[in-house]
Length: 110
Image: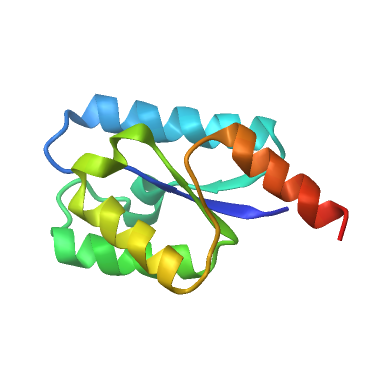
């Protein structure tokens, strides 16, 4: 099962909004037969310092097959770093589930 890192804005948003958007995305990925890697679960500490959280998230990102960027990623320094890092190491980056599924289908035909 392909592991997909979920990247999006966390800092400055209400906790319940953050938890629900990442959780809902993780569920959508599971329903599409992907293993979603939820950065909220990776860090598992709402009081974690940003730089420590980013280090944990980057380690998790490096263990994934691709990245799914949530629409809010544009307003997030952390998600922009994760996106840019993925691009630099040639890790596929997707903006929606449809394109992610199509990519998986092309892998299956190779």
